[in-house]
Every structure is written in structure tokens, then in C-alpha cells.
Amino acid sequence: MHHWYMFATSLSLLLLAACGTAEWVNTNNPTANYTLDYNTCEMDMTKDPKLQQGNRYFIQQATERCMLKKGWVLRETQ
Image 1 (tube, one colour):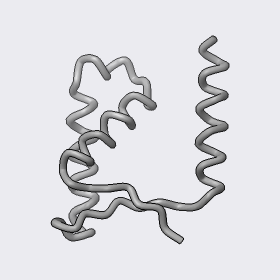
Image 2 (cartoon, helix red, strand yellow; image 1 turned 90 degrees about the vertical axis):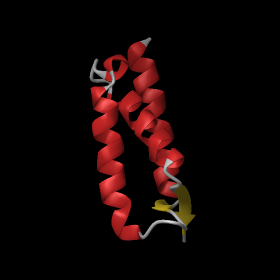
Image 3 (cartoon, rainbow, N blue to C red; image 1 turned 120 degrees about the vertical axis):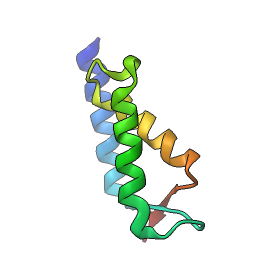
Image 4 (cartoon, helix red, strand yellow; image 1 turned 30 degrees about the horizontal axis):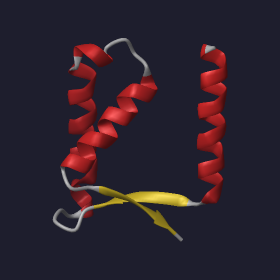
């Protein structure tokens, strides 16, 4: 079951990547602060006991939620 889930997730990400690219934007924060905010979110997520099992997918999802809370939005680019 775990292998099927990983395969389906990988395939979905591959298909999404083929459709275009995306970037994080924040109208209230300069793009230069993106790396600082992203790294802060990622570090905070790795400290969460529920996420310390090392599952990169869950850490990524939690990091993205943190970025959304900071006002960053993932927008598709042309």
C-alpha cells in the first residue's frame, strides 16, 4: 500500500510539473524575504514532534501551510 501511495504521489507531482511552474508571491512582503520565511517555516516544522518521523511529504505540506499563514501564495507562472 505504501509503495502505491508513493507512486501515485510521484506521478501526480510529475504531471503537475509538466503543466507549468509556480512561484511564491506575497504582496505585503518583498520577494527577497521568501527564502528567510521559507527556511523559518521549514525549521519550525522539523521541530514539530508529529513531523519528526522524517516523512518529507508531511514536512513539505506543513511548510506550505506555514507560508500561506505568512501571506505567501503559490501562483502559476507562464
